[in-house]
Image (cartoon, rainbow, N blue to C red; front, side, top):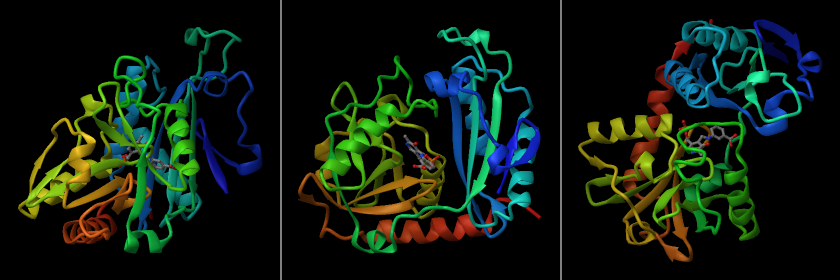
Length: 289
Ligand code: PXG
């Protein structure tokens, strides 16, 4: 595998970072997870734009333009023939001193990995996920805003540990006010009749690229889409609940905290949206060749 490191494609075993990189020392950096489908990078410009917004929010200046970054992603995919894969784009603060001050780091480290994608087993898509609410609350928007896709994922990892301890694969995270934020690596949606709901960013959710596409596709199908503050009651009593994310796409939720959602299987709206989404993903995107 060839890894993009600051403008060069280098062999995997040469793709190393310093132990003084603040990305390692403090989780100081930002990232993106992107998919390629059928030789095209899905929603590339949107992912690059979000990366730059995350960087802006942490006062990290990426030493290349957004079009240059997009071109670097395509080049890395091409070099690895990553035509149906997963792309990890990472920008760290770079090498600095052993102290918090980020401004001792002079050069951010830009890394692009184009690899195979790890998917949830197909069985889970058919049966629906059983998930739980966990005790770890989502970061407050004025601590580390969940809008920032930062290298500091401990908040999510602590929640994921609780989910795994409970025998499940995903967790619902609430915020400091007790309302629903998102899952550890996915956004959450509820369907009631012809209405589709998802918590707003202000509740502590990342504005997912998949989330945005799903909201558009749902509107095109005649669903009324809104972003209200949501409680667990809204999830427990919904007709359908599903999660969205780059890796998962759209996955139905059959059970939350031992309450069956609908009849406990992915519902018709979830299945229709999942199909429409997958088709859209396979037909759009920035060509790699
Ligand atoms: N919330 C969080 C906290 C995320 O990390 C999403 C929502 C969904 O956003 P997108 O833009 O992907 O629709 C994410 C994305 C992984 C992995 O390896 C995680 C994400 C993306 C890609 C891979 O677990 N999280």
